[in-house]
Length: 168
Image (tube, rainbow, N blue to C red; front, side):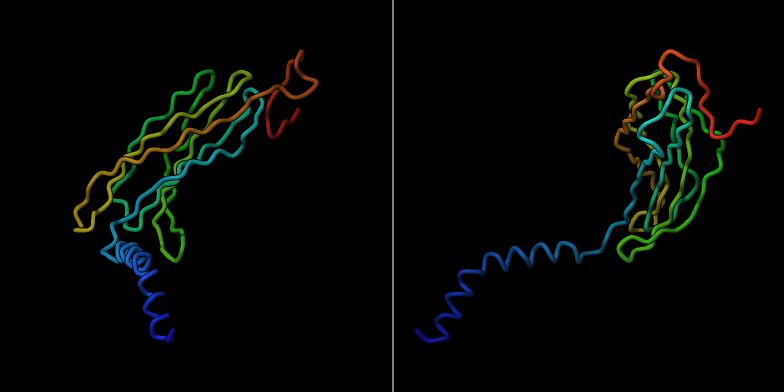
């Protein structure tokens, strides 16, 4: 067998894989659409009754936000959900060498009893320009977040106060 025949046999064998590879790579090389997404972070997965938990909603776009985000506070059974400040933090963050505009919204959760709690999906609508520069609404939806609330060990039958600082 000559080396040319071996090369032809190899190229025939791997040609379908090469074509699939080219199709995959070329699908990413077309004009990229604006990327807009959200993350939801809870500062504790475990808590005690009445202890404040901070839920941070982070909105990202590789464009810019045209105005503020529209959303409703989530409804959580056996917990009070408030937004102590309506101020939205605007900043920038870089992921994989791409700079994103970021908006952060902070909510506070006060569970009133023990148990397993779930922050339901949160829907947020943002105004972001599309690939033609037209500002369009985009609805983002978070994933649910679960946390557990228990009384501190040894305090099941006693009254207690959950606070980060106490002066008597």
